[in-house]
Image (cartoon, rainbow, N blue to C red; front, side):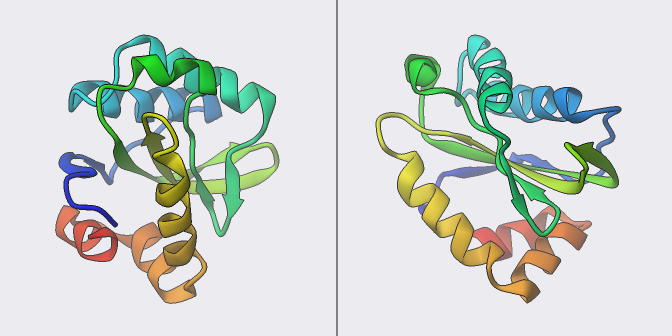
Length: 141
């Protein structure tokens, strides 16, 4: 994955959320906090989720904004937010959210790179079970 996409400050490994909406908001806030997106992007992430679930399997969701929200993206970035207690995601249990912010079509290579990692059961498990930021950085960079 491209250097500079994952700010270590956007790796949050001990979060909790009562539901999917709160989990997506937490991802969005992480992207806002590292200066990757403007505040309205968080609502666009929720709007995307209402349109189509971002659950991708193996306990992982990849929340991201709508096409209309690309103007709120300042730079391509991802965040990794782990919810050890799990969140009900339309009947699936999610423990890891990888939030994406991408200008133009930047999300396509990002999604492809993430899919490659998540399709490897060992790497996907390493991400889901990571308790140190360094472990996440090792898997994603």
